[in-house]
Length: 516
Image 1: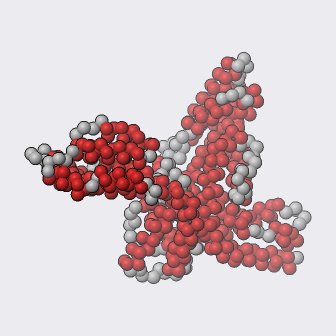
Image 2 (image 1 turned 90 degrees about the vertical axis):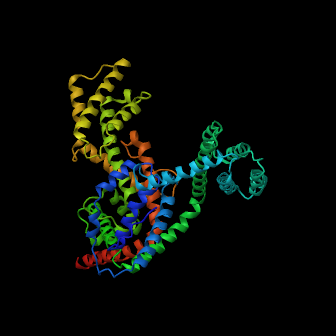
Image 3 (image 1 turned 90 degrees about the horizontal axis):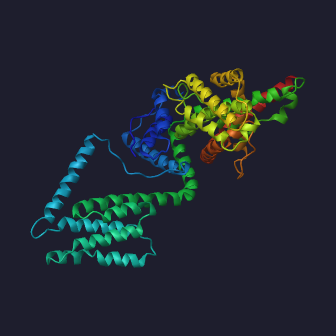
């Protein structure tokens, strides 16, 4: 994983640069979505960060040390929050100079080995070195209790004995390679059995050696990924402490590193305060009932996290403490936007189709599949939502009529079909009433998930969200995991900032009460 040590103007810029490098090098199941996200967030946004004091000069040594610390922090963070994290071999660009040089060097090595083995008598210097490397690799896969296997490897791949056999013309390298393949089959993961079988079909020594090292590299990756999955639970607490320590170092060097966080939390507190005012009866005053509606720190934090799902990533910088997860929050935001359209279309369709069709096995899933497929890629610049929804309306109406006919019901009249198509196409309007209703219920469900994140079961799904319950719960799992870990790391900073915000809020309420 690489880090570009360009001099940043704030800790936010350091973390922003880290996120780009981190996403390039780590495995990511939603690579295309994340690539679009990165392209949509211009780097110049980071220059908009308000600065309470000018940055002090930083030496190259300090910068490199900071970059190394951030890189380590990002790797630990990725392992903890990304349940699908996997280490994969680096793939060089097809026509890059680095790949050309590597290929030339490798070809020269294998050509040299082939030339040695074709000599009369054969020279085994390179082959013995390769056997030594293979021996080290096999031994590295063993656990402390694998005493018998360790003895077998050490005994068969005894390099001193192999050298003596080579000098006396008694070396049977095919037999040694056969032992190596058998041992690899014993030690590899079941997923590599096919690769092991292919090794047995190779009869030329040089290509066989190349294939053996290729499979050994895969086995090393498997071992590393197994280790990662094993340490993840233990790593979580240590990683939280490590990230908090590193962020504190940034904060000490850049005192303004919580400016965006402060603004973010203040807006969340203001949102809840406005909601509190709406909840008050018309004849009551803020001062009279302020005690009953005192803002809670946890509620403000949860409201702040919900605001991240409606963030304007193009025109507004992300808060510093969640910047490392900006891509993940934006990915969830995009998934929710697509799910919102899907859920709205399904609610409109099922309401028009009636309970007789909705209760038929397979019908709801078939309609949902049609809608999801036709809305795939809706965040691409070339995607036209209105045209897509027009196509959705045609397909859905055709499927509804087909299902009605198959089960002995009267198909929709032309008038009812026109009405349903119009309702589906109207979902493209941001002010669509049904769309707003579904959106508010999705937000409420996610809010309830945050409030009850310590419970194993999900809160009750709001009405109208049944058709998208499975997808919504999958998103909620990712979202809650991300939020809970962020709270674990940065809660001391949030508590400090919110302490000042809530104290000011209480003072304002007290002032209003005295005026009355």
